[in-house]
Amino acid sequence: MGSQTRIKNDKLKILVTGSLGFLGKHLVAELKNDENFELLCLTRENEDTSYLQNLGINYQTCDLLDKISIEPHIQKSDLIIHLAAKLRSKNDEEKLKNNVESTQNILDCCSKKQRIIFSSSTLADNPLDTYGKSKKICEEIIMDSKIPYTILRMSIVFGPNDDAYISKIIKSINSGKSLPVPGDGKYIVQPVFITDVINAFKEIITKDNFTNKLLTIVGSPSSLNELINNIGKILNKKPKVHHISMTILKPMVKIYQSFSKKPIVTKEQLVNLNSGSHSMSYDSSFPILSLDESIKLTLSDSDNL
Image (cartoon, helix red, strand yellow):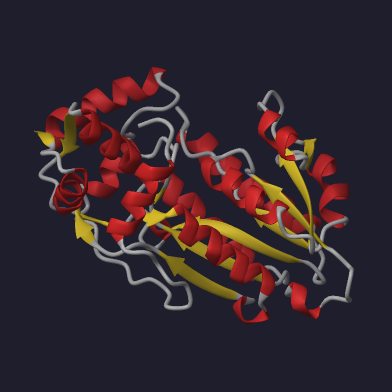
């Protein structure tokens, strides 16, 4: 149900969950500029909605676990972009329940005339932690539903002014600070630049040939050590790398994560890093900037460096 098939001057009504996350903010800002789209964002209670207000984007406070509260908004939409997910939680069962139940509620409110685009993760390919398992289950219930869908699996998404590990690496090297690296740093990472992901979403929204498909978008593969060295070369600065043994790091991270809302590294991430990550291949439908270009754009556009 791409926008090119719609009647002229009939705007595509898009509902977005998770619009105030890093990816969500970039996506709704881009979609707001397209006169063919009419946006409505569902936000959580007590979320700071000033970003949406400043952009003039309509929003409604809802609980995705409350089917009654979201149903009227979903039924008025043509397309649902489901980005919201609980990434960090002290309780693994709560995280799993939240992510799966919210997705099921959205599907229950949809009709076959609508379409859902689901933001998934490469961690769902071989889930080792609760977050990856929740994404895998969500993918399965979406594909088993009768609702037209597109699932987009992503690796680590980074860009200007985010708080992801990749951006923390860039900031640490640029400021000359010591950079803690979990383990030996030889594991494969494939960070993908935010603009590449936004462009992929725009293609999926406007074209019909992505319906009922599971797609993957990731960056070029490299070891974390290689990534750090490349960033150092671009900045013309020598990274001050400090490798920390996984044996020492695991109990430290578990304690830190218990009282920090935004830990630098989570216990779930350590599980995936320690598994000997393999290189994912990205879908050729979506062009990807080189790592060097992505890092330069992150540096030039960021106001936090």
